[in-house]
Length: 117
Image (cartoon, rainbow, N blue to C red; front, side):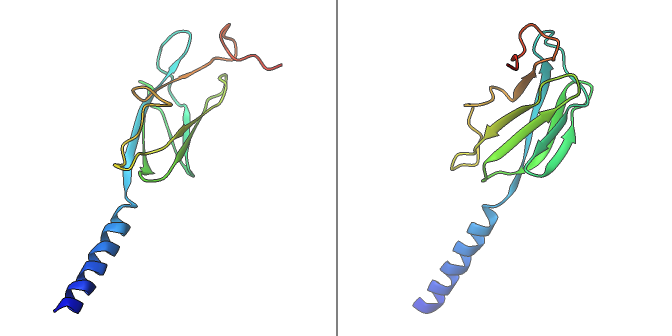
C-alpha cells in the first residue's frame, strides 16, 4: 500500500510541475509620451511571439507565466523600447518595471526623447 501511495505522489508531483509551465495573458496599453494619446500599430514582441496594438493602444499576448519575459516595442517614428518582466512565485507580475501595464514611447521628434550622443 505504501509503494502505491509513493507512486501516486510522484505522479501528482510531476503533473503539478508540468502544469506550472502554463501560459497566461499579458496585456497593456501603449501611449505617446508627449501627447498621452494611444499609439496604434505598435509591434509588440515577447520571447518570439508578436502582436500589434489596436486603435486604443491596447495589446494582449500569451506568455509563459513562470519565465522572465522581454517585451520589445517598435513603431516607425518612435524610439524602440525594451521592458523586462519577471513573474513571482505565484505567477503574478510585479510592478517594478511597468505600473498598471501602461508603456510610453518617445517620438523621435520629442523634446523629451532620449538623445543619442
